[in-house]
Length: 229
Image (cartoon, rainbow, N blue to C red; front, side, top):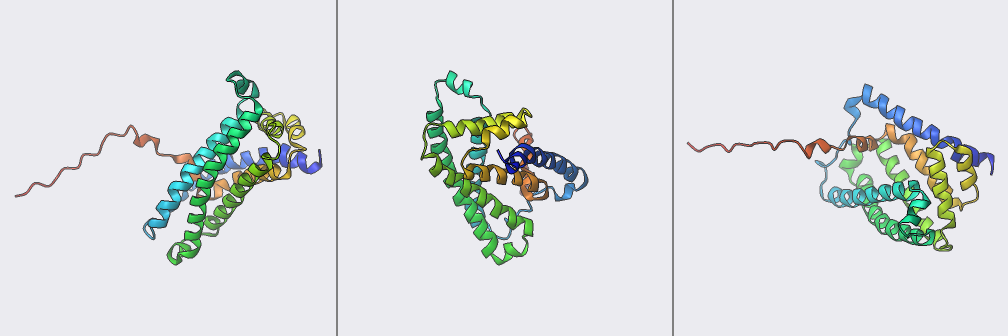
């Protein structure tokens, strides 16, 4: 366990989460007019539709998988008859499938933003930077599948689960000990994930906190047809 491990995986996650929640709170409170995705649909629709659907399907599945996979205690998995090696295979298969879907969508969106002159002209530095960061994070995640394929005993996955669960229960010492000797690609994936939390309040990603669920129960809009005279 090094000093870098102590900072990166024992201290930095709390800094990142504090910036995520406090930064988002301040932005929503003081700059609500910037709380949007700044859609460029009017400038180009075809590539946006192809990339956006694939990216959102993939990233939602990946986030849900990470949440359930990392934060569910091993005892619960054993209770339903899933041991560590089996869970690792499931994570590799499902994560790889939705990761490739997300990769297709993300690359489509990135190329659209870089190569379409109209979209590029309306893009901020953060708009482009966040796509590159997401691409790097996704490639690290997909790359970790090949590393996991080299040891299918689930042992390293259990260490990642221990890190996540000890982090959310504020047991940082146990979290650092659990992750100290895992493969570097997992450490890079986690560190970049925390960095995405840091930049989250300053990017268009804040729209994730504003999913319009109220539309589901909103009364239907009545549109009356103009009667002919």
